[in-house]
Length: 355
Image (tube, rainbow, N blue to C red; front, side, top):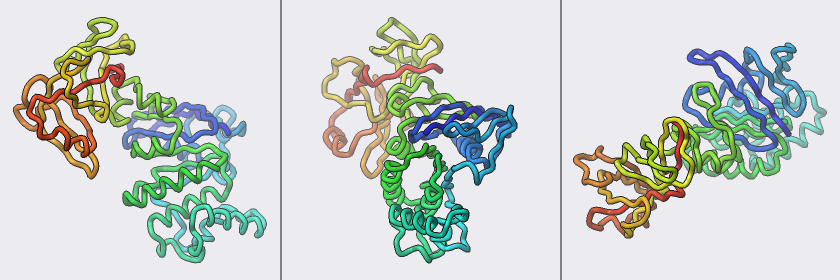
């Protein structure tokens, strides 16, 4: 299964220009609000028309501006699941799931309905209407409807964002299981980094209509090439960097020199490290290890975020250089230790980025 996209479409603030060639994988699309993620899906589905370019699905041309080809939505073999489910309120669950199958014989429609009801755990709900379902049930019906047409590409536009945390996790597991047997190409738009990492194999990152990264997820999270890509993938610690030698940079904003192991970008550079990769240590003499003081903390159910000032005590709560995330079990082992503490910025975990 292969999806080739190369499209240009003017938007109100900037042009959308997206290019990628995806083979039989789950592609996660990340970007800020209004960056062009959903518009990309809508163009692939045929709900919007690019100004120019082409979209090719398994050697079938869905759109080509030069050849004046624009295949209608119903003929594209595309399944789409929206953030707000978009179920037909006047139809039952069974009628919603089989809505796109009207051209098939009754026996075939019934077979596909039975298959999706079983796969997505909807048994017993077939005769209910959407307003008689929970949010999670509605989302499973929307996914069943999208899969019932046996699409060659499945488009998921923030499908879990309206759900509570527990339901979201349940449906995430359900989706991973469903996609494991799905033979087509999947595009998944979300703001949730843990979700995109769990579900997707590759990532496409869009900023202001432009693709700024396209690679497997491990490469993008471990070695983001630019400051914006690092930000959009959740990095919180950045400093401007100045080259001292091939193995050392000055972290200007952190007031320290750092040993590094990767090559330095030729243009203006930043150095970054993810908050969960910082290590509070008892060994002050290691590489990239500095005295630090706690400016303030922020608590989540399982972790503590520590706002740390390097070299000197903070003068106020917002006087800090870096953020470290630690599990609460680890936090209890050192939270009462006298200052200074020592934090290690592991050379293996540091990454250098273009501005």
